Image (cartoon, rainbow, N blue to C red; front, side, top):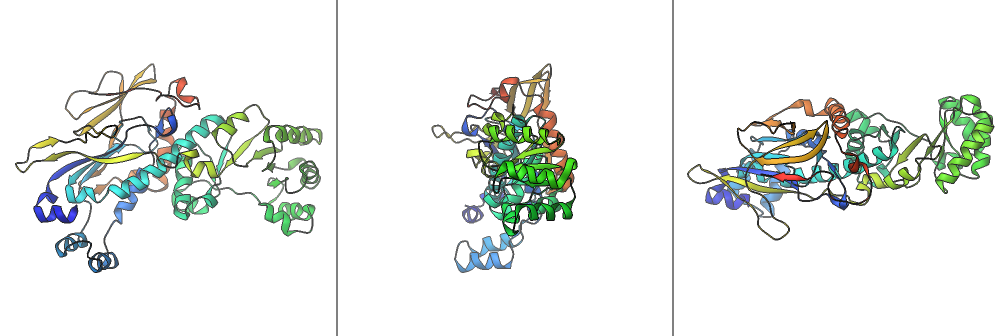
Length: 417
């Protein structure tokens, strides 16, 4: 498309592309927009180097004219959109990209790959956080994800309510708090479970968490208490019927006098399993596979469509796709969340205008890039912390029906005017 547009002169027409979702994946009641900070950082370095240009030339993908254009490519347009951590609904204009066709069309795959994955994980993580209530959540899914996706997943999960990650690179690169627990391999390495527990306690102190289900859980708890004493920080359970096992372990710990020793559960948890453990004596959760795969919906289903362009005479023309069930709405847009007594009642999306915001509404769109200049406030660890704080604030706007885990219509309607 770029090659042909450069040939016929349309490549330099000003255009508006919009990234949005037609529906919420899996009958969920809200979505969480995530990945904006990662996308901005990736755009800083989004270049076509000698190796990429050589490949395009040798494979005859594009013409010499296009190779010359790509050699100097820098995104010089503007992007505005929802803040990272913001809630979204069908039709929400999550990103609006304005620039020449050549500038903007190249971003489609990058923007969608980042936003679709991160938003899927963030939405699943938010549902798990709601199900967990005040109990801490740890992200532990790196072994079930692409090596770079694992870092992105840890970041998205922290933004939407998880408290820590076992992925140290997410801590280094994005400032996500880190944690870890011993694996079964640690116990199996030693001649006895007692030797493994003693070595861990000597290395990390009594506040550590001991994995007690490598062999017999009741015996593991007994050994953990005998070695760690009353100051033992916690025990982890990774198998069995968790509600029953957790109740038995809590009873045993209390009987041994370890009323302050915490219980962490892992073992293929998702939001439904976490909700089922709400009445169980569990203190924290570790979640892996379900989190990094979007709890069954590994993509948010977002799309990137041209919604407006300038004509040869410079007039702005709204454009839209009309295909059945896959249409779009032409024109650049604004978005507001209408609130009543602090509770969201409507996602109000309208064509861009100078009209005042609807009464009782909150504007949802903020500038991210202005004529090629990136707003650094959305990047790095500081951007992650700001996104987390924003998410926790706006999540309180959700109506009660939005907190249910069952499939349903979106929690609030979207009006497009």
